[in-house]
Length: 420
Image (cartoon, rainbow, N blue to C red; front, side, top):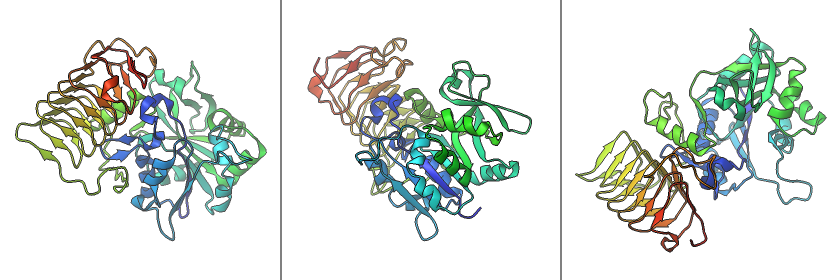
């Protein structure tokens, strides 16, 4: 399988992640303590011995491009293996923002034409999973397929967000629905495709259609050449606040199926303040840590339970963090209490402040589809003052100063850049 090539789509806005993507692309969102979401796909690429990868960026690409660098962190740098980053073409006279996944590949068809492999993979940069792509390509060849889609059974209530397939006894896809409100099948696309390279070129050059799920797959289906590759491992689309929190919590559950260490997930330790030059974890004598991930550079003097802490987090004496995700270099002052919160990088939480305590049944008034289960999200580099309370399902904007806040932020409320 020498010379297998891939296109990694990493340009989506990811708006359902709310303020976590205000200043970064979705694949660049930190995950699991010391990783970023895109690390899972990049590591799968490296571990599958792929030789040529094009990463298509678009929305807020700078931190993502810096993180990927030359690909050496995933063993994708050298004479025989390479990662090429294709920055957004917005602003050039003959180009516009990508209109869909197929349009993104079409606008970079020169890469597809340049590689020598018989097949080319189309991958997404915003899913958490572990897969050896060589197995999927072998399946593709054995079936004599022109298109193969990785599939996994999902809960029926999730099918309206995904493409779903009806298959025959030979795993050939006989019917396809894209984000149907009443899907006939719960066998869902994982957003992972293998195409015969020349067939992909013909599909993209003979049409101007924009999206694989809505347009290209139904067109290929007419020729009866599309197959479903069955996958039974851990896979999660972390495109919502709830799914992102769930997947992080899954790492703390040994029976969940996610294990970045045994999966050989790699990251760039030299960017984003992740691991490079971080001191060891410091745990004070009275600190308590239970079922949590504590990354290098953290200082724990208080209580941390069922939580994921990225590098450099400080939890001071008498403070508690439960069921939460705390990103890089946050400071939790003395006797502050945090419950079911996602706290972005560089946030200061004041003394005796409480976050995430209240009626979890009150959805966020401005974004009820984003925050409805009791989670509260704190934006990057915000300063939260001493002795205030912030309820559940709250959104606190990035870069806010302490003077913006009222003494109480009620459940379901949002604090924005304007003063109350």
